Length: 262
Figure 1: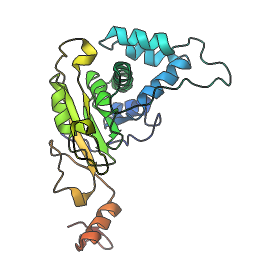
Figure 2: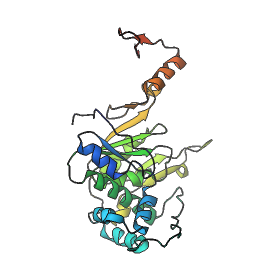
Figure 3: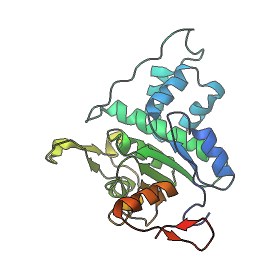
Figure 4: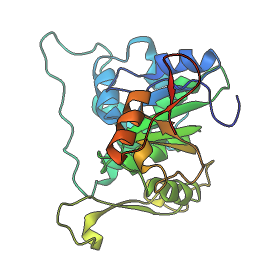
């Protein structure tokens, strides 16, 4: 694959753009992408249902912190699954400061999803996260990095601070991102942080830093270009709408009935 993939599968939806779809796309030579949204709940529910096929337990075996795997299996795995009509357990709500188990479960879940997507083909895999779902994102990224994720894609906001967070976590250091608070002052209590050392009870290992592809509108491109120089853009209609909003003309391409963006 070249520096940037020709085709990127959309990483959309909780449990929709899952590891099986990403695995198929990457196996075909393009960039498969898993959705990282709410993967802690997805993993919990798969385990409660007995982990059909044993896929998640297989992936979890390679998680580098065995005590976290043992705790997840103890809490959630049911060999016979749920009883008919039985509701799923409810995970503790995410707050600005996650407790240690929440961070570990989020990291484990993202690790398992990316591990399964990468299994058996040796080609790149990406993960998609929503910028506006800020609180779990750092733990999600760390778990994906532990699995060797190759690309991170983020939209639903302008992910300005993510390249720096990837740098920090790749070095085993604490990462911090500002929490968007309407009318906020930018104080320390308006940020979200993740320290890999809290998972390891000591120094965290260095990790490979994935490439970063921000998903932003063309009208914001000059001010918010990604650190890697890569871009995932909106549709052509969205780009043209942005041009009209700026008063920029559309330019014809020379082919009848077609247009180019200036």
